[in-house]
Length: 552
Ligand code: NAP
Image (cartoon, rainbow, N blue to C red):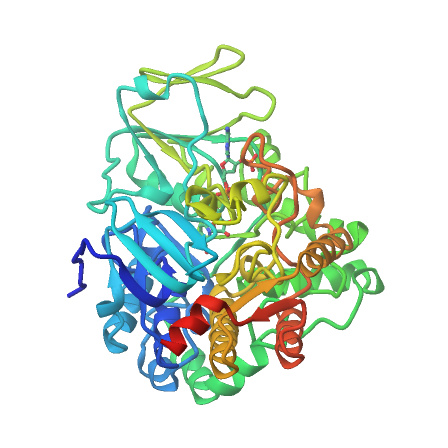
């Protein structure tokens, strides 16, 4: 059982971890392994982070289950049986709970505990964290493992609180589930969450109305029960496969690297390749068709048009098909969705699609939705699949400050600034896992989590072994890295899309490209080189208070 005791005396730790999702749990395991006293603070009433909260119908990972899992234990990866090609939310949560038990992680997890403030006391050289309930925690280091898509966002629609039916957000789904049988349901949002949920709700609802602002590209997942033919060769070579995945941009192995430019192939060859990938299922394979799909608009147009034609072929009503065919961003520049029967769902008589780009939602009325044109839709239930304050939301919700007067919200006012996505200048001893400036969200997330946490653990270990106790990036290293992140993004097609990668879904959020899209492989080499060169770009020091403590 988790220890949920809330003591009144400040708790003294080596490392305080914020969050007990996949990142926080691995951080407990890894940091404990180097002899540190650690504890993770989790707002939820269970471990699992994203997979604890996102319980909407059809929630499933779109990275294959044999890849989307921890690699740190060969026994674990051999023992665990994934029942399907892609893990469902309940299955992934079961796996995370299994890991928490198997590695005895729960005794260092405090559930139902939201961290509200984090102050770095420069004199004492320690972080002071305060929980919502007023508990105080003091720690030499803090690891922010609070997630990138963990701050759900419902747009500020007029009238929302007067809606008489029930409304839900995908990222805060009721644990007991929701039965839409016989109801008129509205879904707002057609990102990965909406695309997964819409076909399932359509099977229950009397009528489903989907409000779409931006049409998204989606490819068939081709999910199926796990076959021996898929599992055995993978498990026989798990270690080698994990190592090979680290040499790829997405940290996902098994897909041969493309060698040819798109326009070097004939139209017939391209059609054959795209068709084969469409039939195979999955997104990485499709984006790996050619070397230049994410850097050349002309190349990308061929892959985008192939999918648009598929949509036109599947959806029977030509007007609906055209509305569903994305035309404002190159394929892959917004998160490419994977689906099961998404486009087919629009052929059902009980499903209608409403475009709200030209005619936006004006207000939520007590009985439904009204658009700017005055068109109204009567609804019994409303679902917001409207996404998250991505990448910066969770850290900005915590009041992070230092005794020198630095305030994280102010430091990040014009967009997030980090060095390697791992640390922030002016905020010593605070590490971030898969944060802005890191490739995390553009990769197999668990691979990035393991890489980040390993790097952090090695850095803390290095400090200890060299009688040092403070690490902080230089302002120059941070500026250079942010510039590099932007330059790399600008050399691709990514910035062309209004995605959450640039904060476009949050009105007023500075438009800054947040993830590093240079690839996991390149990033890992850079992190390793920085460490090998004595933590280049970081200032490492021994603090007086610590020296005094040691003398006492
Ligand atoms: P999202 O991708 O940000 O999609 C939000 C949707 O809501 C978009 O269609 C957006 O339209 C729409 N929207 C937002 N505000 C609106 C407004 N005022 N009026 C009308 N529409 C509005 O969020 P998400 O689907 O929850 O996915 C977020 C990320 O989580 C994904 O990109 C992915 O990384 C991860 N995820 C992964 C999986 C998986 O592995 N299968 C599943 C779910 C989520 P615009 O596009 O016009 O902004």
